Image 1 (tube, rainbow, N blue to C red):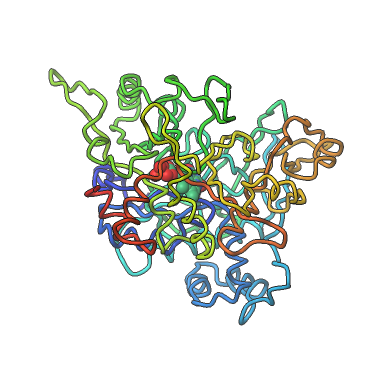
Image 2 (cartoon, rainbow, N blue to C red):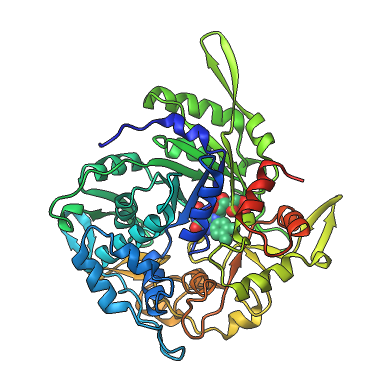
Length: 511
Ligand SMILES: Cc1cc2nc3c(=O)[nH]c(=O)nc-3n(C[C@H](O)[C@H](O)[C@H](O)COP(=O)(O)O)c2cc1C
């Protein structure tokens, strides 16, 4: 390892600008957050679907030249040239022409249930993650993180390696429990291979996804080992992932995916019925942190998220009790992770046209309801079905997006990107299937269950469409936290064209 981890560094990051997939927190947003924050803010790029996003940006002509510039710094120049030759279109593709997608993954299987991806796809994934982090870090010395969803397993390891090649400072991982991930980071920093467990089929048989950087680079460079921050729905995540350097404890009202509710019930409006058992129990969290400290030899830090844009002080004051010798101290959160307020900044990756349409809904106070004396923002619906990951997904109800029933019904099902697809055994081969694909194929050919297909959308295609990089026939779908108050406050003061400076200023001094 080139440098030892200095975990005190984590205490400086009082704001984490959340990783928002796919491409909402792109290099532009993360770089700006990090520069404005000047050491206090961890700007985070989303690591979701970067290979697809990069090849589409190249086919749009890479107008700023930044993607080609970053590729010119990629350690493997032969791969960089191959990518540009294959995908770059001078002046951009004609609008009526389809995008040429990144290859759909196939799996090589050797003995002992170990799976690998095709080498060309590995290279593309590494390069795309390198590009995003390189551009976010370029021209300043402030920290940059990358966020992955652990549910998206097949590109996971080469993605992390690509981000490390560009010197990423932190990896933040949500939607799953990446056990022993710190060992993966340690290994990659000295060019060792890594495997992660991957469940296959309905019986969830254990297979392993493997990536060996030595298959790609003859001489693997020594790399800095980034921090590992686990994003967890409540205290139990800290037990399931004991070796993280820290945690983001995320309430279910945040944007994006949430952990399923423990009751398994729906409210009368059809949203998951969360209860006290789903919440972060600070007393239990405190005991888990003590135990982890004994096992790891270091104290883990934490941040709060989910409607915390105006609660930095509260998060820092409200803490876990820690006994040091005879002294009892309260360890508050280092700070907060904020998503939605950054999503609507002018620097975010959302297409300007969709941003405008989304803000029309966010600012429409006639959609609010008062329930038990509190405002409930009905423009946001926590959809328990739309994500094929099986996790509830917070959706902003914007006309002419997939959140509208008629738009959803008119869409032709397909699975051509496969990030959220699951692995299953097809004879003796491992293949991908997605409950959002054509029902007959999923059920009859791939032996999926009919009940899993009901009201599933295609987040892969919709989220990429949100960026203005969509395939023909695909419609956007916007995710957003359930609390609109901070966004409205900032817009009322600074107007709709607010940016990262105003968002950070608000988090530091809410009004
Ligand atoms: C547009 C959007 C996309 C998101 N995508 C991801 C993601 O890809 N991975 C993840 O771990 N969390 C994701 N989140 C959750 C955020 O990382 C963050 O924890 C959450 O938004 C915090 O709550 P807030 O939106 O109320 O500030 C997303 C949030 C938003 C608003």
